Image (tube, rainbow, N blue to C red):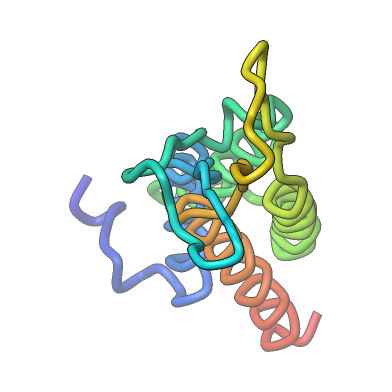
Length: 163
């Protein structure tokens, strides 16, 4: 087991792409959007409630299960490449797979981050001086950063291999 999980055998690109999967898996459960009730008059602008209400990425967009699964699959493929020699997974085009999978993950996460959920007022009638804003929070930023790093590293590894 020690010989198989020896990080020295892993390339830097494989380490970064493999770690991006679990980071993204955690990020979809973090708060992605926050709702804040604000009030404004001609003299005063401010936040009425603090801390604001938050929504996780998976709650806001159910389709984030797709990049979650693909990112974890990428990590599993990389781990399988470093099994002991007889059991190692031999994928001749694994670098292409990582680029395509990372691209799908990045595009899906980016679309999910850009599509803010609409404000929900229910039966609440807001006075004209009050309004609800939906903003991004740290979960969306972590997910986009992890997906972007994985894509960038996968493309760089493809180019450095000369394939």
